[in-house]
Amino acid sequence: MRIEDRVRIREAETISRFYGDNVWQGLAKTPFAIILVDDSVEFLLNHSSPSKDFSPLGFDSLLATRVYYRRAVFDKHFLATFPAVNGVNTIVVGTPENTGKNSTDWIITLLHEHFHQFVNSSPGYFSAVNGLDLSGGDQSGMWMLNYPFPYADSAVTLQYRNYTEALSQTLSKRATDSFAVVFSGYARERKRFQQLLRPAEYTYYSFQIWQEGIARYTEYKFLELLNGYEPSRDVSRLPDFVPFETFRESFYKTHSGRITAWSLAKHRRDCFYDVGLGEGLVLDRLNPSWREKYLTDKFYLEHYAVEFEREINPDR
Image (cartoon, rainbow, N blue to C red):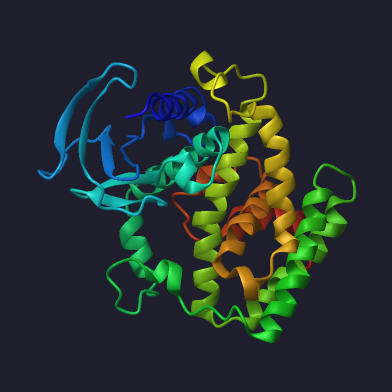
């Protein structure tokens, strides 16, 4: 493994260890199994039970773990988390060069994927997902990417635009006295969007913003906590490293901007990541303790602030 990749992984592990439980209680203790895919080889680390096709490379003192390797099996552009080796939830990730990310973005993306490890390993997660009855018999999990959501339906896309514009405005006013007024408009447009969808379509949408959108939100919450954080000297010396505070500003501008800039018809499922970021931040304003319910009341973000919405709008 290259030293650059090792120090990036160590930085992500350090951030999770010191700040993870401030974002999600229990995240810091979640195993951080990783397959790093380069152009020809895969390296497996932090894994409790490597499969026999991996050969031992030795103990890595920098990462404090045994490392295994094999000829590359997964795509070198991967950014995903799934039970990749012997049923263990594992981050499968290409190098920064192959995933189009600088060092800072790549470290934060590892934390995004680590959040998925935390969620996927929680009690009842897979049975609850199966209970949504959205797979259509697909056992591979690809339905999560390929579900026939009505991305190109003209009525849906029009109302999606109304809804996301209202969400964006609410997001911009969440620290002001006008929040209640703009929130009421947002809640109305969101409800209209829901009513245009079939029940299964809305379930899929809710699942996506609950899972992928809140993973994007988790990236931002880590960046908020890293205000004043001093990264390791090794990471700071990487030529493409951007200080976390600087990156947070560009991250927020980019992803909050996509809430309205991205088209449902063109960007499809990718839209849901940044809408989930926005909805998570609005939830922070409505109910700062909403994350306590995340793993016990799954898949519908609106469940986490019903009583607070009624305080703002008693007619709801």
